[in-house]
Amino acid sequence: MTNESRELPNGQNVVSVAPIKVFDESMYPRFAEPIPNVTVTVGKDALLACVVDNLRGFKVAWVRMDTQTILSIHHNIITQNPRISLSYNDHRSWYLHIKNVEEVDRGWYMCQVNTDPMRFRKGYLQVV
Image 1 (spheres, helix red, strand yellow):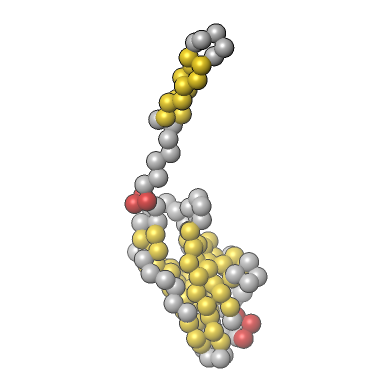
Image 2 (image 1 turned 45 degrees about the horizontal axis):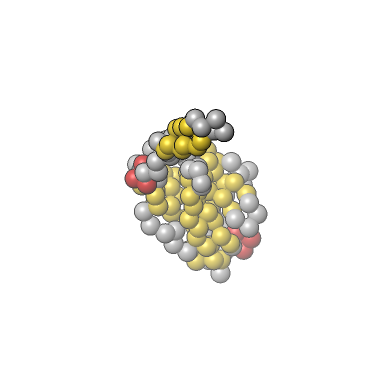
């Protein structure tokens, strides 16, 4: 709590009390490692990995950055692209699978956590 005091014209003091927001970094999710850039040959499958510690009740989403397309939110696939799938384990590792990679899949992919402010990591998919 913080106290702020000011004097009124009649000489009386008024004290206001405001709560202090305590930010404890250990209470929030953190990325355990960067998302590695991946190079895949056309027609092969790609796997992007996102590892998050201390996720608790927050949710992970995968986003295609150049088109701002939401691919997945937590356990749910959002995109209509049938080549995209998701797997995860231990509420810590989140994997974006892209089957039969095409040249149009090349670009940045973001793994984000719905904290405030949002936390994210990104990895690049190179298609050759």
